[in-house]
Length: 499
Image 1 (spheres, rainbow, N blue to C red):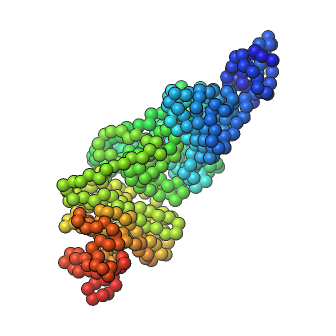
Image 2 (cartoon, helix red, strand yellow):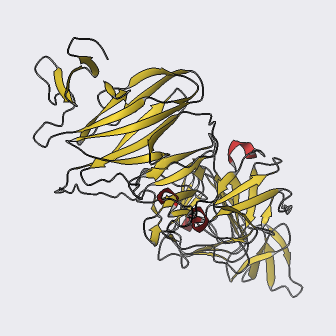
Image 3 (cartoon, one colour):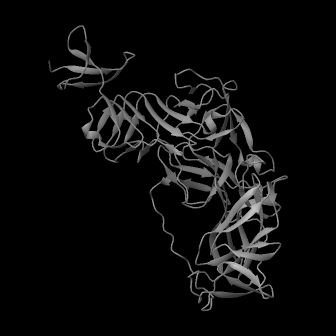
């Protein structure tokens, strides 16, 4: 039954692709042309559940890459359809092109922190000739009482390009409404969000409120657009003006513009779609799925590049003439959630807000359902604080928010740079570098707590258990003219009273 030109058709009788003078290989025959030279066949349906190579998949197939499935493009091929489910991955090659003649769909679940991905995709190795969609599953089951954060990997018409999973077009300001962020307005000390009705741009921070009737929204690529976007996003310093303060300058609402997981090498804030609070992620501590937006505060104009999620960046320590400490993570936690504050210090730090070293913590509500730790300075609450280092010491004021009465844990990461003490009403009570501190907090804001960072002298060992200790494990500390004794993380005054 060959040679023939045979064409693949889908259930809607749409022709996807054709191949001349090839064997049919048991394809399902749908019919013949009137003159008999064309045979219509159904595409093979392929589910990729493990590791698979494109060379093993027949041309013209309908391919679905399932959660945990990984498809490697090792040869040029053409698919009739491609769906990449959350947790599925297609790894592309710079020299092997994958073309999808029918619909291409990629899924992302914001609350689950998991999406499909096309790793290594560019405008040459991945071609979507027809319609492309991103299915975005919102956090908190698409709660109608909340704003949901998202971005898109390709342009989408906000008025005409959003559907339910059955293909029904949804109506703007009836089924959903969208806002975008304006850093130039925020720099004036005003509310930065505005109603949005245009074309959604890849890698831009959007908020969407919905009618609560569905959890997943299908967004269609705008006709004439490229399915693969640039992995770089421009940002701007947005100098403070009018009523704006230094803390209001430089705010950019951007996001992951790619079809794969990514990282950035700067500190950003990401909205947790489950707990509805912003998390601060310092350089390379995050893994952005497709569709993830974030805030970045810039001190100067420039661009940010979304790097491959498994790329590793190594920064060699730099010995500086000015005494300084690298960022140290301090955490407040209960059994359900951990929130982080990042502190650092240097001799040349000022008492003014410094973009890139200090960071205002963005909030969505005054009564979050999870614990929050804030550094308090410059009349605002921060998630990053850079303090002056005076006499090898720096101090910080804290606000600890508790969603309910109960026990909470305060801790600090171990570091060779410094030791961090928890203070209360100005006096040190615990070495949280050596061990966590458990305390009871009342519902709401808890003040009085602070931190004292003590920089390690260069000649002192960096072994936390051994630094500055005598043979019986006791450390003497002279702080602000007062002598304290530390043993096993606990602090005592000279009379032996536990602090």
